Amino acid sequence: MEKKALYEGKAKIMYTTDKPDELLVYYKDDATAGNGAKKGTIMEKGIMNNKITAFFFDMLAKKGIKHHYISMPSDREMLVKKLDIIPLEVVLRNVAAGSLAKRLGVEEGTKMSVPIVELYYKSDELGDPMINHYHIKALKLATQDEINQIETLGLKINDILTKYLATKNIDLIDFKLEFGRDKNGEVILGDEISPDNCRFWDSMTHEKLDKDRFRRDLGNVEDAYKEILRRLTGEVR
Ligand code: ADP
Ligand code: TMP
Image (cartoon, rainbow, N blue to C red; front, side, top):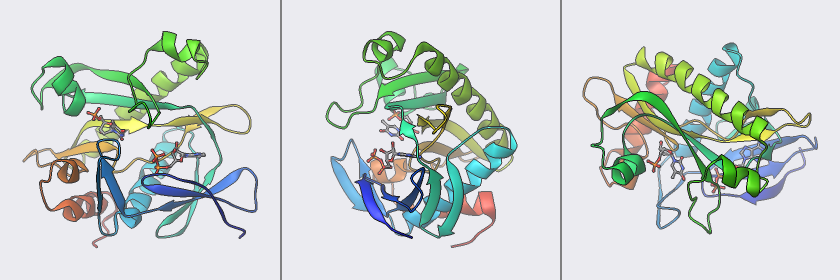
C-alpha cells in the first residue's frame, strides 16, 4: 500500500492509501492536555485506543450508526473512509465534569437532568472556542440541516453508549465526537471514541478510567486504558 502522511495530529497520523477515498489512521502513544500545553507518553495508548475505537464503531454500526471505520490492518492502524471533516468538536454530557463544572459552578459528579450537547470550533490556534448555530452558519462550517443531523446523531450515540457501558459498570460522564461528509455528502461519524476523548468513571467506586488520570496527574494512567479495553473486549494487556 502506497503511504504518504497527509496530516500529523496530536494523537494520530493520517496516511493516504492507494484508494483516494480511504485513509490509514496510525494511533500514537503521544498524549497532550490543555491544547498541547502538557505533553507526555502513555505506553501502548495507540494500540488500546485503536482497539477500543474499533469496538465502539462495530457496536454502533449494529445500532444503525454510520461511521468511517472499515478495518484494522494492525494493532495501531485503522483503515477509514476519508471524510471532509466538519470542524466542530461535538461534546455530549450526562454528568457535570471538567470545563462544564468550572464554567457553570456545578459540582463535578452532579447528574444533569437531560443530556447536554455543546459545539466547539475545532481550531488549535483559538483553543477550540465554544460556538452556537449562528456562528456555525455565519462561518459556513455547516448548514442548519447538518447541525440538526449532528446533534440528533450525537444524542443517539450517547444513548447507545450510556446504556451499553452501564452493563460494564462504567458511567459515561461526557465525550467528544467529530463528524464529516463522505464522498456522497452524507454526514457520518469520524475520528475516535476512546479514553482520550471520553470520561469513563467506574459505576461503583467513581474511579476515573480515562485521560483525566494524565491531565490531572492521578497516576495509573496506562492501567485505566487497559481496564477499559478489558471490560469491553476481555483482552488483558
Ligand atoms: P488533532 O488534529 O486534534 O491533533 P488527531 O491527532 O486525533 O487530532 O488527528 C486526527 C485528525 O484526523 C483530526 O484532525 C481529525 O479531525 C481528522 N480525521 C478523523 N477522521 C477522519 C476521516 N475519516 N477523514 C479525514 N480526517 C479525519
Ligand atoms: P471538557 O470538560 O474539557 O470540555 O471536555 C469534555 C469532554 O470532551 C471530555 O470527555 C474530553 C473531551 N474533549 C476532547 O476530546 N478534546 C478536547 O479538545 C476537549 C476540550 C475535550
